[in-house]
Length: 496
Image (tube, rainbow, N blue to C red; front, side):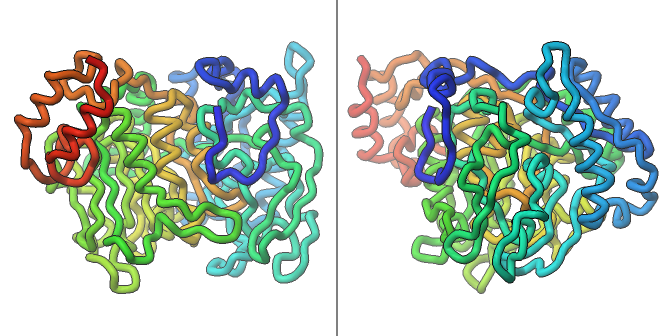
């Protein structure tokens, strides 16, 4: 277990350190018994998703909001609620439920770690000043992550006023290989103080990962001939048994040319300015997953790839032409149609302000709607945005890759390790309990799959000599061509 250079806060007890070290890092897995399913039986779709989820995970706890006022035939009306409605109809009833004790005498507030919300629930809390850092807009899921904190009562200087107005630093962001259950949750209902830092963001100095609920949404868009509910049923079905054989899938990282103001490098405040796509590439290649990392101003479409299914798609999406630096994707909000082969564990990260708008209204905004379309197309996991997130708040592809695709952690854990801020616009979509089994740990440089790096792998490089293009297995150093540098890579990892 370790925090990488992204993490700024977080305290572990001695017991947690012992649990979150080395091979024992997953000694306390997130399980059904520590997961709460929140639904609204007054909404037909929410109730249907509840039934599906209980079939997939019969051991989860559940809480029924049972509120007809939270449902409407018009998705635009049910998709957004006021902050007062959120407190009275969602937050306060949930707090009251979690104040109960289980058979061991533990409060449900401490026992529950993950929360699954459903299609049919509101998706966005309406606010003011969307395009500023003191915005009061938020996704339902991001706000519920700090369910036990009274953010409206945390007094701050103008223009922030309270912790609601501004992004709150996520204390779990940047943890690698640290199961959420290893953090002390005994004080989760203890009020924390919040303060402005660096003039533009909020931090709870004593806030720890043990103070969070990991909240993800189970949702999908409809697709031609298929309802949203049918696509959700497929999502849950494939999420129960996910396996990744590194050499049989590929990752696509599509950014801008070197020297441009790359969105995935954006940081500031107390957020990382590291090159997220570069770090994701390193992690995936080391595990044996071929990566097409495009650093040109072209937009990379799926029809340019080889036949292997895509397990990670990280792209600037409809912002690929932002500030005139790149090419527009084809069509308007339809580029995912060019990626017909998605791996069952496929993860999607898009630098789009409104990739989750369709979760709220059922329609796109500015041509951006891809998050739920990705689920409908056969992908399974994404972190969407229901309002302007700013580029520094987009989930890190590297941490989703390291903790979820390669690290054996649940999607809920990986998603919140990758999300920089809370009480903000991010909405993780997917089964929070889903895990990926990584087939036979790959030896770096082992091209033949025999578990060793030897002459056979050297021959594989020589046989592919000069090959260029995306996802060439023998392009071990990822420079786009099979050359002498790849021979050096084999020799430096030689096991004989």
